[in-house]
Structures are given as structure tokens and as C-alpha cells.
Length: 239
Image 1 (cartoon, rainbow, N blue to C red):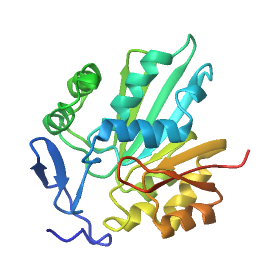
Image 2 (image 1 turned 90 degrees about the horizontal axis):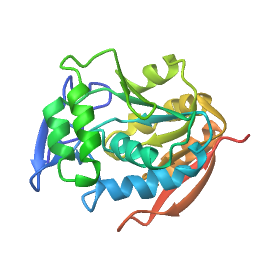
Image 3 (image 1 turned 90 degrees about the vertical axis):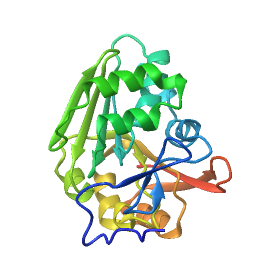
Image 4 (image 1 turned 180 degrees about the vertical axis):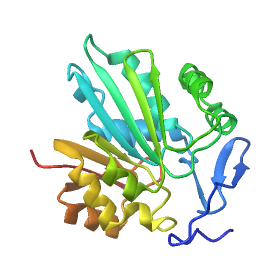
């Protein structure tokens, strides 16, 4: 197995292997991009349910989700799918993802092609995905949905954004593979950009991740993880 990337000297691209047909695997970070059991169902369990969605966005006006690690776009597509089923008049979804190494359109399409449930969202995303992937990617979709993918190192990108977030999906590579994505400095920036009463959810349950989130100011709780994973974390910024 390839050793995980040194966070001080990260790769300038993502080199992918494809496991079990169409599951992308990062050689640099030594990790899959989503749960091998079912990434779409994990998204629903960890990120949507862990964030109290879709209930919280219904009738909320503009609801903004932040995400660390856009990856294949799976979380965005599944969130958009559920948004379309529950959106009410006047609601708008802003989905802002921070990604250092954006995939190419054909890689996204291949990675998401195994889920017919999000085929419409996959096609719409791939059709609008730019060939040059740097700076800020902004795409306005139907259903009052806007996607931003902010390309670059997470800490600097989160610190520099003008957005404030009602919910966070913390979905970087595993903490043991990419500890910078879970650092105390980054969790502090996430907290500072979270609205009062806002939330985070993550599949990660490592002790140092929990402690960093608590040190940042979040009220943190453990929940049952997805599939064979014993625990996950979610929490709130006090109102």
C-alpha cells in the first residue's frame, strides 16, 4: 500500500486507482473516497441525519452547507436528491465544498455511476463541471441549488471564505491518513464560520478529532456509525 501523503509536502494532483470496478482510491492518501459498503447510504446516515436534514432546511429560506472534501461529489448529489423531494417555496440551498484536488468530470461520472438513485444529479453535475478546475467553481442548478467548490488548501480556504454555514459535512480522508484535514486550527475555523445553533457531522470518531472539535467550541456527541463502524460524531455550536 502506498504511504499516505506528507501533509507538509502534499501531492500536486490525485493519482487514482479503481477498486471493485468503479470505486476510486487515492494512492497518495491510501484511502477510498467513500464507504465500501454503500457510500450513498452512509451519506444519508452520517451527514443528512447527523445534521437533522431535511427537516432543518424546510421553510428555512436560504440554508448553507459547508463540506470539507468534495471528492466525487457524492454527498452533494445525494443532498440535492433529498432537497428536491422536500424543498418548499422560497427555500434555497447553498452547498459550499472545500477541495484541494478536484477530480475530472469523467472520474466523477465513473465514481457515481453505480447509483441509479442519483443518476439525474450525476449527469447534471458532470455536464456543468469545468475542464479547468482551480479558484472557485460556481454552478447554479435548477431547484434553487447553487454549488461552490473552493479549490485549494482547506485551512486557508475556510479562513478566507465569506460564507457562514448552517451545517458542516466533515468528510476528508481518514484522520490517520490526512491529519491536517482534522487539525485543531482547521476545526477552529470551521467553528468560527458556523452560525449559532449550526451543526457538524462526520463519520470520524478518532479521539483527537473529538478533542479538536470540543476545543474549537462545539458541543460534541457520539452516535452509532454506519454499517460496521461503531461510532460517528455530530455536534452543535451553542446558540
